[in-house]
Image: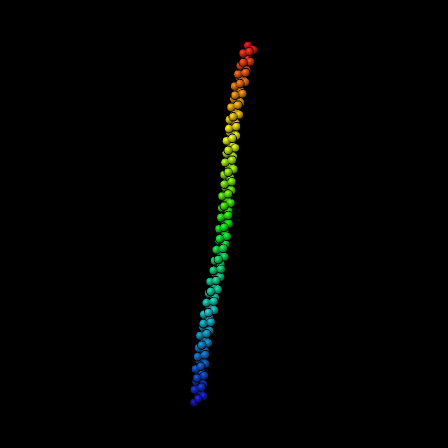
Length: 120
């Protein structure tokens, strides 16, 4: 009878051990699935961080390009103002030269008239 009880107790213990092993296997499977999910989430986050870093780099490059374009535009505007000023100076010099030429012509015509009167 003791042997039967012992066999029965051993069988019950073996059943409990099997159940405990099944529970451990189930928990291990869930832990592995959770680990895989966490690894996938980590990979996704790393990818997002890389994309964010690239976006930040692209934004910095775009800002640098915009700043360079603004500086180039300012330099072009300054050159255009300088060209306008030189053009105005050239127009003023041309007007002054034309006035001087008109004055010379007038004096020459007066001299010519005086000369003709002297000869006549």
